[in-house]
Image (tube, rainbow, N blue to C red; front, side, top):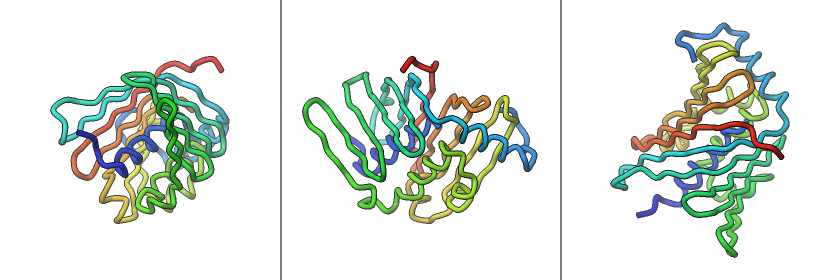
Length: 196
């Protein structure tokens, strides 16, 4: 059984944000420090593994591949396993290519996902103002080991995604966990930086 197209797109798009801790609340300037470190990163190319636990499936979905980010807003997810597929998000347009078939979708067609997509862009760009406009933010840890939790402010977005937890070290993201409002969960674990 496949998950609904809008949710699948949302999970895939949020997973792309993976390119863009210790317990306890961070000092007020720690978020600025993190945003500056993320903003300084203009390109990323990493390996990933992803496990999605969906109530409609008997067992988790597993995939792996590569994630590529180019500032300010180009994201690419190359799924290598279990079957090749490439997703590219650029300038508000998502294209999905599997084999010789490509589907192109304007993100404006999914207004419920717009805040989450902007959250992705804002995280990768280190744009604190945009993040705070769209999400309640909670940063734990310090720049060496941090976890940033995003909870959508928009009720429509919150009906799809309860929270996104992004963990990292300095400007390196290590994992992205997406908790859906219905209890489904996706965990993206990032590997080493890959050569261009």
